[in-house]
Image (tube, rainbow, N blue to C red; front, top):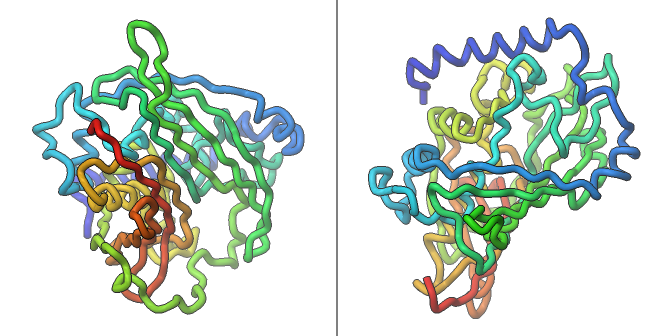
Length: 347
């Protein structure tokens, strides 16, 4: 699907700005001059970062009009005080303070409170991929549109692992407690959101991100308890990038995807897929008193825009846990997940 004309005019401007910033920056980014990885690991897990945001109505109207879920009211019915569904916290605490001229060549931010140090120049900065995460939902006051919301974040885990392509990766898991700021101050957290990012050196020019994967197993959706069909398009990716302030070029710059990263096409956001997988669980809860206690996910393969997929789930006996996955018609699994539910009398 072709982007609307206004979006098409913006894309070259963004692409050229990022490329110009990468080629003309007068000095290395501050994030690339600093402690070694071991020094960073020894201190980062003792640090806490507190942020504040407001759940603005326009932001969530934009989300519901983009993903169009049958369980959500239409955009015109949303108002201040509407409860945010599970997973909608992804639109909070966006990286708004990063100047365009400092972005890496791939469009990602050059640093941040939880970003491991990149090797010194002339080595390129580490690339970043969102690979896993989870939510835990509490009995505290839920987040609502219009609320002022706090986040207390910390690095919970740092691991190094060498991938199949020989690149050493750094897996950083960040946990954020989020809750409402009331007249009496910060109230107990409504949820804990965790995100795991992989930081690694870019592929060499001769390598390819589009290598042929091993043959997938036979599709499993016919044995699932539910399978929600879905298909993405480039306009959806453009909107979600804007809503989350995500400038990673793999989501909107087709030439960059094919020529630099050697991918088949635009890549669907991992958090967008996780939100839709969680929403598929929300659409298929056992009964009206069921409450999602927690949900975890892990990306297993990059998903190219326009690929028809199914969000699948299979309940355990008793329907307290649900194994979930995202697969296409060939059986390729793009994400796995696990949901835990419980019953509540007050919904």
